[in-house]
Structure formats: structure tokens, C-alpha cells
Image 1 (cartoon, rainbow, N blue to C red):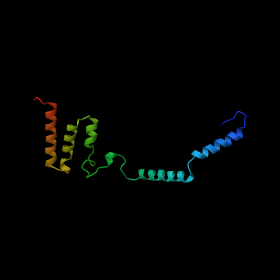
Image 2: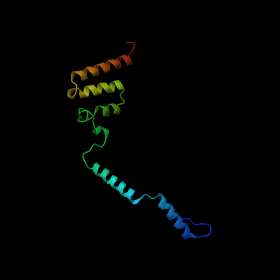
Image 3: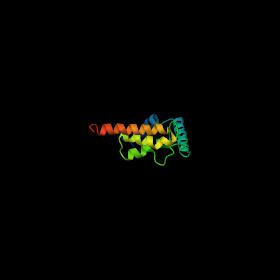
Image 4: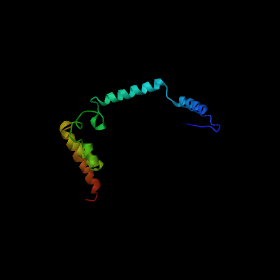
Length: 119
């Protein structure tokens, strides 16, 4: 509560209330916000994906795995070559078959060339 130098408390309270009216959201804005929150809460109760790991663009060859390759690779701090090799090996039976095995081999050959260039 603000008190002016003359001690007129009521006048200061009225001014504070007027100031509050300026920054208070309109009733419609509050209702819209409440509707959005209710809709958001509703979506949480559905079987909608809640993380990026629950969603997959272009198939379900990773999403259906007990541990997705990206989870394994991130947890083990694998470099990109290691990550791609794991990815291709994990998905080959459900995506590109022999082509994915060849991609994994190629990625491992790249890793060998980069890690041991003089051998």
C-alpha cells in the first residue's frame, strides 16, 4: 500500500487500483488463456507423443525398438561415424536390408581411415 506525504491513504489506494487496471488482462484474454490451458491438459491425457523419441518421421523402424539407436549413442558419447554405424545396423532388418549393412561397413571404413590414417 502506498502512502503519500500528506497521509491520504485512500487516494493512494485508488491510484494503485487504477494503475492495476492498466496492466490487468481483459476478461476475454483470461478466458482464452484458460481454454488453451484446458486444451493442453486434455492433450496430455491422450496417447499423443510427449517427446521426440515418441515421434518418427518416415516409418517406425526406430520408434518400435526397446532402446533407440540415438539413445544408445548419446548415452555412450559416440562420434558421428560410430553413431551412423549403430543406426544402420539396428535398422537393416526393418528398412533397407543389405544396403544398410553396406552403409554401416562404409561408415566403419571411414572411421578406420580417420582414426588410423597412417596404417
